[in-house]
Amino acid sequence: MAAGLPSTGIGGIFYLLLVLWMPLRELHLTFQGRSSLARWRGIAMHWFVVGCMIGMIFGQGYLMDAMCEWLLKISPLDSSWQLASMLLDDASSPAFALTPFVLLVLVLGAVHVARAMAHRQPATPLPASTTAQQVATPTLAAGEAATV
Amino acid sequence: MQGRGSHDSAGALLDPSAPTGSEPAATSTRASLSTGTVQTPAGQTLRPGVTVLIPAYNESASIADTIKSLQAQTVKPTVILVVDDCSKDNTGQIARDLGATVIRPEKNTGFKAGAQIFGLKQIDTEFVLAIDADTTLAPDALERILAPMADPKNGAACGMVLPRYVKTIWERGRYVEYLFAFTFGKAIQNHYHRPMIASGCFTIYRTDLLRKIGAWQPRTVAEDLDLTWTFFANGYNIAFVEKAVCYPIEPHDFHFLRKQLKRWSHGFFQCMRIHWRMVLDQPYLRSMIAVGMWDALIASIVYLFLLPLLAVLLHPIYLLLYFIDAPVVAVPVLIGAARRGQFWKALISLPGFFVLRLVNSVFMLEAAWSELILRKPLAVFEKGH
Image (cartoon, rainbow over the protein chains, first blue to last red):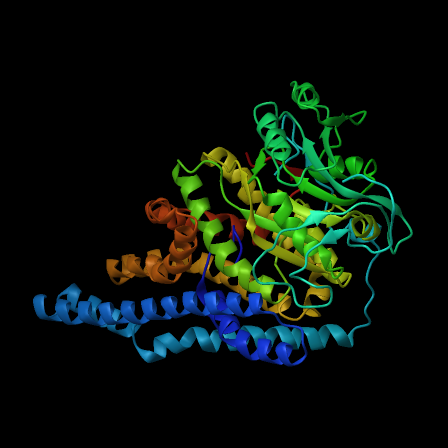
């Protein structure tokens, strides 16, 4: 989730879960004396935002259901809008909603598999001068400025 | 601020609300600079204070605003150092007339990191604030971004970024993108001590640590992302201070936007190629990058190929899926904007986000194809605005 990265997909769900995880983690830190009131306030703010987001998601699901029913009512049988209403209905089904969670678990699992595989190989970090050769050294285009 | 004495810790700052060793505060606090000399763990003797390092090439249109905003800070920088990278205009003269220290390499260094490295050699203060020559700061930005540096575990701290001008559709899209990424994504990343990137346009560093880890490297076209991950690889945290705000000039047309997005997307994959092993060992960061990369690639394919196909082959109603996450985006954006008194500005700008996202997708796929499949890295540093 950074400027230039184009989606909220499973990343959005991942960040929601990170927020939901915050109080448990913070409780642990509080017992260790490493927390503060300011951090708890921050968590409360995150929970407020995430609560609103979840509310909006359910609201959106409700609207999509209502739209399906309305389309079914007003469109003639075998019309393309009947098909559309069925497609919309599919999009708000529990199975469709669960898919991103399954994907998230798979992606996070893949990271840990990759990590385990990387650790099997001997770690040979390259010196900066060598790693610099892995990608070409950029040069300034004529007339271009050296700032972001 | 520049008094002499002895000071044997790396943090020459006062920040009573964020004691050393505790988790960083979720909300930023203010700080003031103390006096004395600073003996760093690396054996360097530095004076307390902040040098603002501004690499500049042909920035005569914007450098004056940048320097004036620095001079209006509630905590004054010790030195404003402009590296005039052999500009063809009067950038250096403007900066000099406004009281900044201007240095000039013998020839153009060729990239932003080169100018920054050239400037870093001249710096003898405890902290370096890197900002761009077209970026202005809120009056209390320096004071606020200094606060988390009281914690020696923080090697750097970055601030909130908002476009200075929000007029064209690209600027509006970027405005919403920044509100979403900074007030939601980066705030959460910060809670777990792993902001994915400390933006190069406004980040403060410990001078000694910066030198120790090699500072800005010219090996990628995203030197700020590369440096951020290098800090993590060396065991240091980076703090994000939402209330320390800077205002860069963002691309106002597609010509400049294209250059910026090309650099960002290619830079992301270049950094992945260099740091992938380290990233796998960083809790939270590895997961954030994995889901970010998945979304960037899969969503791009969905937006550019799958949805149009479904709309043509099955039904146009599938085009609604371009906006299916609109509520998820709108909530943090509008809350973040409302807290700044900019609710309506954000609401009007929301459509720009969805347009920009499509454009982002094109550049992300192109970069992945070039960097990962063809192994043809982007080798030209082009300015985004």
